[in-house]
Length: 235
Image (cartoon, rainbow, N blue to C red; front, top):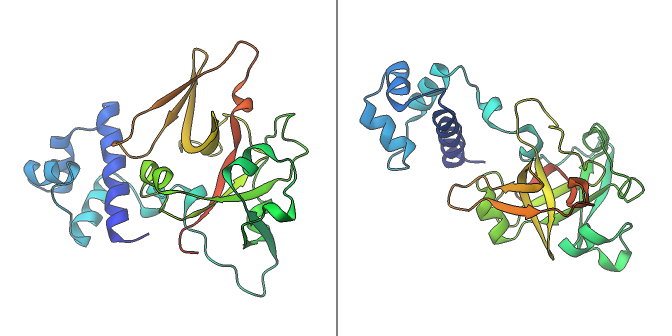
């Protein structure tokens, strides 16, 4: 996560507030002490804010950096050697979707993850996945990363909790990032449900929302492979 990524996260949060009707560009400019054109250029990616400007905008909206960084996808630090760790296999998307247990031959690489960070995650398993190996990881390809940038960088390792297959929000007032079965593909997206459709939402506004029409005998858990519980951005 760098300074440019922080700009984009703040900009995206402000745009969401404006689209919800809880904020306007003119009100934001007034509250933060900027000219409206300055704020408009920032919201439209035509200019960046200084560090002082970022602080002023955050303060005007009663926001902190922690609040605009979704906790479950904050870049995970490599655990200290003295801290107990567990080995999580990095596998292909097809293995993550279809294999209850990961065979040794299917492991592409491994990542060491703090045992406490893994097992502090709350589980909401569906019947289908309750007995599956719980934690696996996949590398985000360029398309997945682009749709969720800057939350996911190309090549980032996303650790999946395959015992969380519920649409119940993991944290209040924060969207939950899921690994979703979409045909033969595995997509990393925010997910909503409405009138028999799963709604797959990217983070980037440059990508379209996708719909998955569910059959009458299907449930969302049939498509939710798991929750993205950790992201390693620089491994």
